[in-house]
Length: 167
Image (cartoon, rainbow, N blue to C red; front, side, top):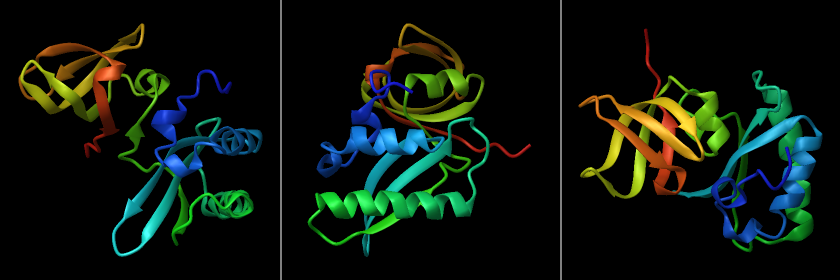
C-alpha cells in the first residue's frame, strides 16, 4: 500500500506518533500486515492500541500479534515520543471493526454500520445504516430505521464501525 493512499490522520489518531507513522506503516506493511487504526485509550491505565489485519485480509492470530507487538515496541522505545506511561496492545480489529478508509467502505459494501457525523445531515448525527455504494469518496447509506438513502462525503463522517448481526 502506498503512503499516498494511506490516510495517516484517520488511522494514526495519536499525535505523538505523527513523526514515525510512515516508518511504522512501512515496517508493518513489509511484514504482510496493514494498520487499521492506532488510538490511545484512557481509563485506569493508558493503552496505546494498534489494530492490525493481514494484508491478504485473512485472520490474524495471537502469535502474529505478539511478534508485531515486539517490533512496534522496539520502534516506540527507540523514538521515545510518548512521555507518559502506557500499555501497548496489538490486536485484530474484531467483528465490530472500525471503518476508517474509503477502501473499507468499499470492502464492506452491503454491511450494517453505526455512523457518527461531524455535523447534522437531514437532522441526524448518528444512525445505523447499510453501506449501499461508494463512489468518488462518497458513501451511499440506506438508513436502517427510516429507509432514507443518504449520499455523504467521507469528510462528513466522524467515525463508523461494523454492527454485528447474529443470524
